Length: 364
Image (cartoon, rainbow, N blue to C red; front, side, top):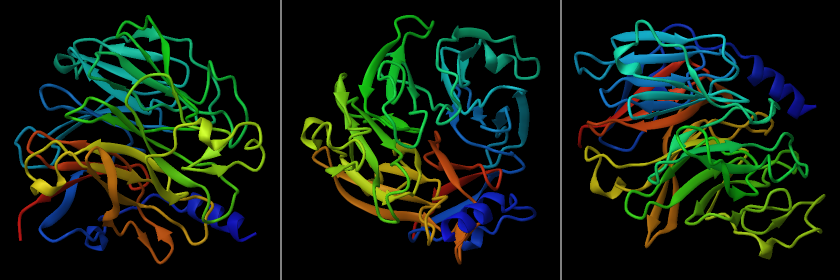
């Protein structure tokens, strides 16, 4: 009953109206947070164009936005709706002048988009062969250093044994949609990934299953240096937690364990390696994670930005970087994705408050 009431209360709490209470956000010394853009209902995944235009996908709103900071003051002064009426267009990616948008069943491409923001072209359908399930059907997409577009397909359930050729995996394909292949398996639902700036190896977040209690299982940060790896779903969670329903079928030792166990039910979504030069050197090539926040945990967890520090290519610390979107058990905001800007600032999208924040370092 407590879980149900919590879900109903948090799930129905209205999006924040009025001035955003950024004074609630706690950051390390020397860092500041401001509003890059607001009045963006459902703002989720972000992608940056060559000319500095920021593209933003949504989920239930069915829209894709384009934002520009034309005077360079750290706040968008032009906001356009590029597309509407789409089916959960969460994922956006940019390459060779084109914007790629992920719906549930297909990937679209808007060519020469930078010069056509006021009159977007009709999209080209790149690939329309993805499953139609909406449970974990929204997608994060991004181009890897190999020039291929990576597209995850989540499990269509909380816990089940879906067809491994279709679900619970990260796929990749050529920019024209051909050559679709499975890169990683046993991935329940990833909504964020990035490649190490030095090694070019893939790292990704993965959301743990529900209804094993408040403290289990953890969300995961995973490391996939090569194709063909299996990360355990549905048999194993975290590093070595056997699933009570499917764990007896295959031992945890058969799979690649989580590189870092994250908080239980924190809903780890977007992640980025920090590649800018504005933050102190201790943050460079380290992993920032947007934790969207729990929906069925008491007390709630997540609703923050965390940092996973690496040493010799392995996680060596998991700490809170920014928090305050959760106040006295109530959330006024939910971080979704992260984007490192050319000036080194870090953008954070928030689909609950309908905003994008800009975190900058000004020194002590």
